[in-house]
Amino acid sequence: MVVLKRALFAILILVSAWSLSACGGSNQNKQSGGEVDAKTVYQQNCASCHGNQLQGGMGPNLKHVGSHLSKEQILKQIKNGGGGMPGGLVSGKKAEAVATWLANHK
Image 1 (tube, one colour):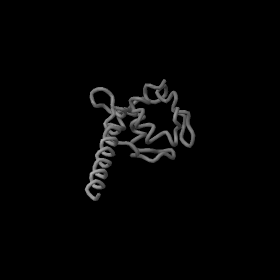
Image 2: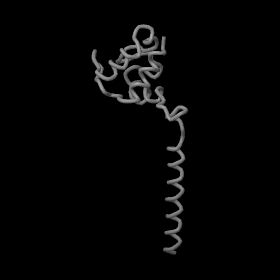
Image 3: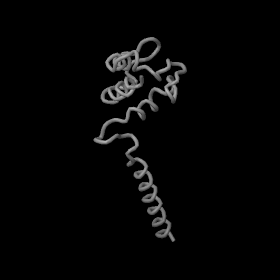
Image 4: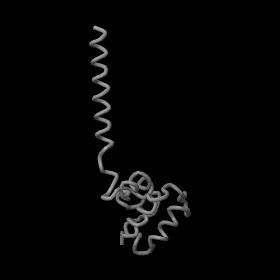
């Protein structure tokens, strides 16, 4: 009986581990070539202030931010913050990807 319980427990652990690895193995957070998915980074780090649809909220509306700010200006804002926005919430390749993505919203 103890052996059967251990075997069932081991199977349960294996199935759980397999299920979790299948979820984590998706390519949702990546684009082709292993690049960062800027929209996902935005949703995880920026949407709480700027809205899920870039509509604004506590932070300004970003729907057409690329029409008045360049990628470099957006990246500087992401890195340094200012105007109520804390700096450094996103950094490195993620910040670059978000800045590029937002600059294309014209």
